[in-house]
Image (cartoon, helix red, strand yellow):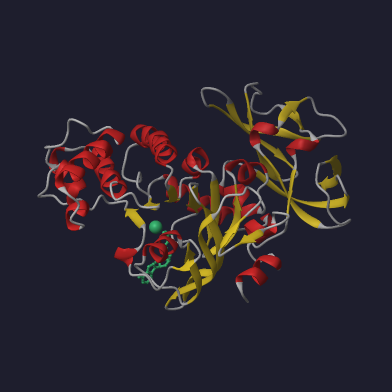
Length: 399
Ligand SMILES: Nc1ncnc2c1ncn2[C@@H]1O[C@H](COP(=O)(O)OP(=O)(O)O)[C@@H](O)[C@H]1O
Ligand SMILES: [Mg+2]
């Protein structure tokens, strides 16, 4: 199937969601009018029996901050390594500005990579590390000096030029690695969990700085992380992956507010995922009650329903509500985290109102707070939710 056919048939989930994809010249652009700098179409990759990438199709817009997000082992690094030229796919195409990328050797690609482990030269100082690539390219020394000092200013390391690498903190080393990659002025910067080794405070600071750098330089960033908050904070687009398969592509708001299935809902933030059934458009049954919702679906379609803990209000029990009992209450600073038992399920509720353990309560939520999702391998009845949660906990604990 060629590219146009794939797009027409909606194989590319991003384009399927858009009304009229436009093919202009060799470069594809979409309704935002922005060109696609990179396109992957039908990429497959296996290591032995493990299918690490399964029919991966997506595009990256010029100058965007795109994040590949998913639990450890879902194929994020492999995707990045294919872009960087360190790995070849078994099948599929990858284009860069409309030309076949896979035939271009790694060192000639207009991409640079920042790895999780800093990979700096320990015997060179800060300035020499950043200058190294430019010296290899035989750039005139005055230009090297000017570009290196510009990059060190950008990563807030001016004044550290002659420091040796072993006198730097983890955060500073990663800044050197970023400066060293950016000094080549690549069109695309690939970043593989670059903040993974930093402590939480430093990570948060660097997230904001990285986003600022990306905007300032107008370079396309392809960022890999397993941290959902990081992905939501920094990205223009997020691709959620699980076991080599793309689960959803969208803006951070789309992914959070309109998760496509239970995997995405569970992986991105806290959520209550319950089996439900549509009666008709805009009406869904949860347990033995009917609720108004804002989605259209076939009558009698079995669905998954997601309700975020912060969208549930605890009120007095009433006939039209789901009624239950508060099983636990934990004070979290800004809000209380409560577990309410109802319908044999444990509902997570976040609220600034305190309800004591043992109280009988009604769960109140509006049509806008109910999100309808397709049934999938991750639906509650498949017991996969625990699996996703344990993945998430493992990631949060830093493995
Ligand atoms: N060179 C390799 N040889 C064999 N298996 C590999 C190789 N690289 C990655 N894998 C396997 O492929 C899967 C995906 O790996 P990876 O892309 O690194 O995932 P992620 O970056 O999302 O954690 C994992 O099961 C990993 O063990
Ligand atoms: Mg990885």
